[in-house]
Length: 232
Ligand SMILES: Nc1ncnc2c1ncn2[C@@H]1O[C@H](COP(=O)(O)OP(=O)(O)OP(=O)(O)O)[C@@H](O)[C@H]1O
Image (cartoon, rainbow, N blue to C red; front, side, top):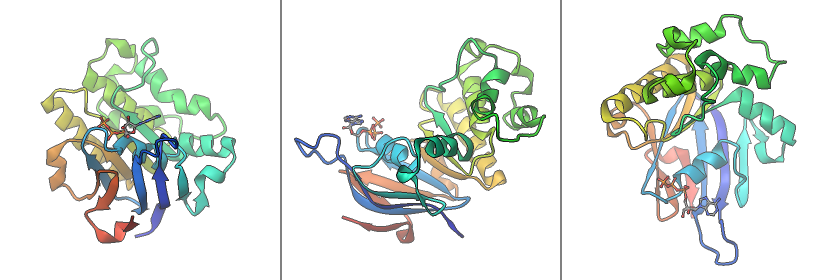
């Protein structure tokens, strides 16, 4: 297995004056094709860690290497390109544009990155994968929560990203739908060989093959020692 993303001695302090420590120094290595579940109490720093790893929030200190490059030292343009083409994001609130159709929402990453070549039927393929082929012409405000999240996952998969970052993607859904969507996401990334980093409370995912990253009082630990090189 090869490392795809490495966090080296990262930490996060939101308030340097009070020196409140949100995330203690830790180092993590994420391997290609594996699923990582971030767990911890509310306010423990799960979203903070996910955002740092996903190139959305610079750590207070430390370095995040993506494919061997120090991500936050790249130009803004290159950081945006990687977030758009090589990372996919799924949020609890779906983050779709309600007045656009499902098709148009899934197409957004292509619109923002017209230079990248995608197959002409890529939208139909990814919609079929998510079981929403029949919903493509519907405006997304007309869709149920579960259907909206399938559209959002399809959009995240559109550019065939190397890593998907998902922040409580099933947090707004009822138990049965939540379980179905979480299973669909995990099965899809496995089939594609995509790395998944997910914040979730879905207990049944514990049975699946994954590595658990736990945050407790700001300290990060993982279910496999090799994945947290050291914590302070
Ligand atoms: N931009 C910010 N500025 C200041 N403090 C922040 C900021 N973002 C998060 N925090 C604080 O950092 C801590 C961790 O927040 P974070 O959202 O990472 O936790 P979480 O584990 O994802 O919580 P939840 O499960 O409730 O979503 C909290 O105390 C939060 O108030």
